[in-house]
Amino acid sequence: MKKNLKKLQKIVVKNFFIRPEKIDFSTSFQKDLHFTESEFIALLAYTENAFRIEIADSEIPKLKKVRDVVKYIEREKG
Image: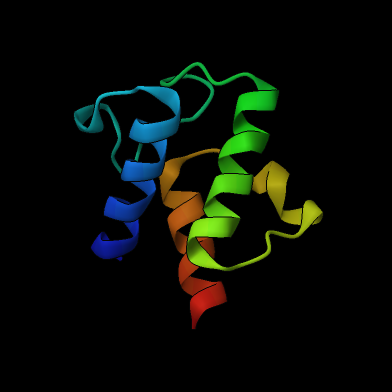
């Protein structure tokens, strides 16, 4: 799980210029990182490409924190 967190951190740092220490399991994309809806959708697209997964549209509203995305990646990667 930590490996996927680190990879997700790199995606956020590279594409949104946020310091890695601001990103942990409890970080909220909206409240802590102040992502707009379009930034969050872009993050999900970067995540899908990096992890070679597809995030179902029905799952997107459930992905509020970094922990949620990492757990989703874990489930999809098996």
